[in-house]
Length: 182
Length: 74
Image (tube, rainbow over all chains, first blue to last red; front, top):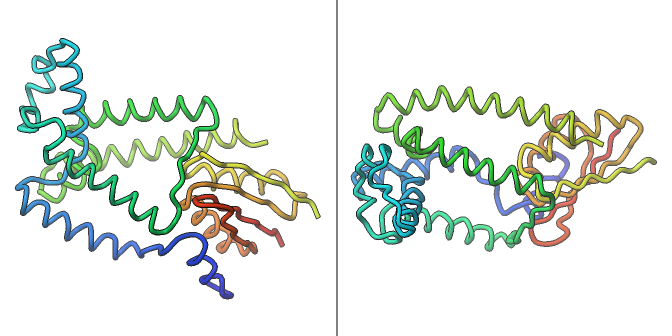
């Protein structure tokens, strides 16, 4: 930072930011610890799939007959809806993030301002959730966990993630330039 | 001195930065652009970009989690 701007930035924009290498090192160490304790890589979305599984079952459906749930045959499906590995870690993630935001006094409930923000949030959630089920995990379970455990599927996921993210970026750029600028 | 405000509250990365770049490129006659965002990553993106372009900027936090970035084109 130049001309004393560093102080302003630290004071005003956040307490930090941490350098990328520090974050990478801490995440790497925690990931090893997690693997030692749970004997499997970190995953996020299987905890949410379990909510959907129980919800559909509660409504009288038979998700256990679905090809996806038959194939994964995960121990998470027979576990408690809340007290299972993925869900506990997810809650820890949410509380950890909240703690960090509160400590830096940046906590704020954000409102959606426009209908298009609402629609894009819902559409994005559905696409990411459905994609994560097709790929047997998200960028945590399939990409980071997959590559770290020497599975080929992590690399395949990575290649297509790169293609998808590039297309997404082009789309956002186009959308902003054509539709949003005054 | 021509001033312009840009409200990108509720928008997530990379839209605030793209909008800022787009407005500055499109409205060539303005000298000062005030961007209001509630995403701290977006605020950081915008001032990193300003530094790389050599624009002067100031950051105010209006309230918890809202930043107002004043960019001066010179």
